[in-house]
Image (cartoon, rainbow, N blue to C red; front, side, top):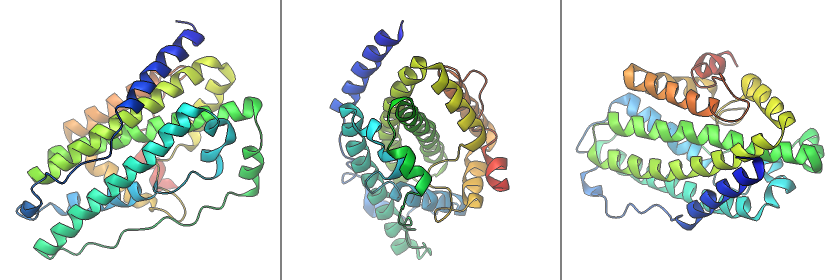
Length: 274
């Protein structure tokens, strides 16, 4: 399949994803049963982390994530609007669960962490004004980074759903994971044809992922690296966690130019060293 045909094929699939988009509905869950099951402290800490990181996406794109080349693509712009709305729904649902759990059990749940104001630096503003090859590279990087982060998120929710022991929480996390899976599919379909289009983009993004990839929500003013390392250590433990990490690395390695790339299995030590 040549690049033109690949783009046409992938964008048709992306359009079907957009057509199926809907906000998360959790009103039918048995909220009165929240707290019947006492959660493992590791589950609570992981859930708090997920709540906070989901909340970081509840704002308009800024900096390079709002690059004019990216947002001039009508399909991507529509997706990002839907993505923010659905992510905000995830935050709301996780807040609702944690508040209900705290009220029922007396558990101490810290307030939701808010992201710092995002002010693009001078270098980022310069890049944001450029188009051409630079603009196409930034758009491809946005889609590739998004795919990597959403894949991690999907698997994190599924692992926590299987381990939490609370049927209400398990169902909530399963529903969120289903939406995150759609987000991942959109990002990876967009990333695939953009990477296939340019050898320069493939080389640049492979180098960036090898040297600089960090998951969404980790960084100065956001969640500390040690918190991410804890979550990865907890969810990545056991046979199911190890298999999940292997599958995630294999999926990212299937993208054009990424053969043999591993970003997840090295993410905990790299994060701790940051």
